Image 1: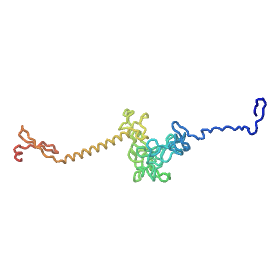
Image 2: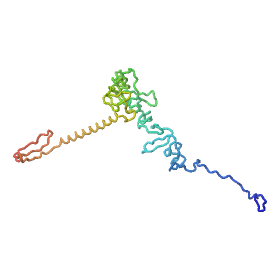
Image 3: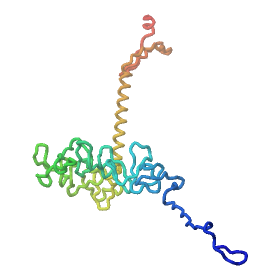
Image 4: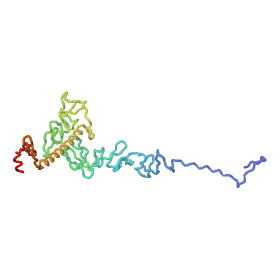
Length: 319
């Protein structure tokens, strides 16, 4: 209706009726009509299901800003290649929230060098004796003292310890007979102290991996490795040999191997050089000594004999 100057009120004509429409509600940003920002990066949208927080390429698990579940290192990538996954693929193992690569010799593994299954028809060594057998390694043939087992696990053949039919203190030799274990062994898988499964009383193997006599009181030195005996005291501290290259023994062994190789090359080089020198032919050179009035003929020889001395008259006559 309209208010007239006279004060009377009259209704609006139908042609001039006003329609009120509700104003449109702005769309929420959660509808992803605009790209999401993550720091200085802008998400491409429509990201892979394993991405969290955005991505630089749609539907790609390798371009996520961060991963929703696990991060898996990519092979053949220099440094920082990765993809987001819900579980680790074969040839990878889980450590914290990351999938890390197994050794190239494993099909699946629980640690980098500890295989659970092997590629192809290889056998898995399933006997934990770190210095005699390669536990968790994939091999073409079982090490001495172990036998192949194709029946217990149909998915993965293993190398296992031969069934003990001889009793404690004995092992089955190569001809099927029972032989005594080494004196250092309580039980064993073969001959010698390196084959002990458990050390005998008075022996230990915490430092170098094979059973040695325990040191007498005062002979062992804390914090050092004695070359002749084992510190069997409860407080003795040795490096963790379950981690590769962590013990002093392995470090010393590597240094010894490298030094031996250099020594062999040095000896070979010296021998070859000496052979070439000894086979050379030298021309004798005359040297005149005015005090003795003689000519010395300087001649090299293997026996280092004194220079032969020739009379001056004889030399002149020969000339």
